[in-house]
Length: 207
Image (cartoon, rainbow, N blue to C red):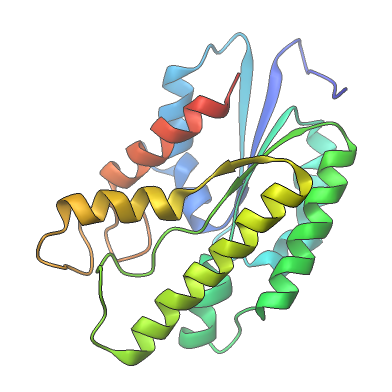
């Protein structure tokens, strides 16, 4: 079993700028969660770094996760692994993404922590993309999300399928097929509604 610091359960959120903003923004999802959970029972630890991909998590997860003696770990990574392939030319091959996540999951699970794997959400809130490059990128996000789902099944972790949750929300609300402004402020980074949607769904796994 994992150790509890001051009898509080340690809840770590590992990810990229979306997770970083979950703590730095007043309406960030980690801050919203903090308002909902019992502060005497849970300590929420944000470990998001802007621009991170799975390769970056491999460098820092021992210090940022294992060293925290976590009881619960949310792993929310994948947007940059896809996005940077198109914008910066330094994304992640899907096989590397899978191998990297597998190592991180295995090491955390070995410590006895509860793991919640989160699928990557969206790069653009449009339901269909006229631009072929954007359409290809969206299909890759589906493939990377499939990797997360498969690893969750393989390792018997919790699965928070944010991609499906976001798409269902956008089908219901994005009637004009807009690129942004429903759950994000730029197609990727969460606005207040997006943070609330993530927080509301994450809350179910903090117990």
